[in-house]
Image 1 (cartoon, rainbow, N blue to C red):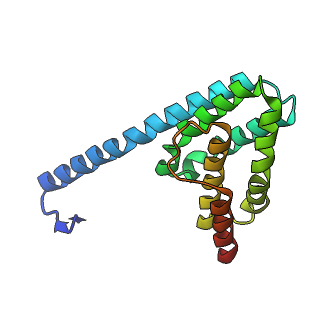
Image 2 (image 1 turned 90 degrees about the vertical axis):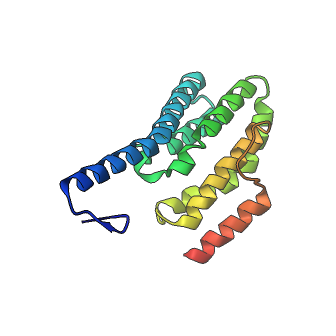
Length: 174
């Protein structure tokens, strides 16, 4: 048996290797659990605050929630992406707060976002594990944050031009 290129020759070496692996596993699991907890709290808060889907804006928010938290999302969303979930939910909460006093402004922003989101929706089932499409999807989420909660700091700069470039990369991959 090998560990890190070294041959394990005794029971003591084997037990020490198991202990190192367990410690590493627990250290790697902690940020994932923290991010998951924050994501589920954000999801619950947004679901409760948004209420029933009474108009297109709230329907759009519900759709976003459904595409962030779904049955197999833990198996499909990387830790690096999950770490951005609190940002997405904070942006959703900001959007919900602003929607009450500026529904027309929300609709205008939604109109800017919708073409990009619909492109993703149109292709994601046919290309479920396509890296360029996944990259495009998370850029769309970042664009959503930039539109509805522009004061929040994004991990990437996003613009329609960058979205178009990411879409072209996806198109070239199929």
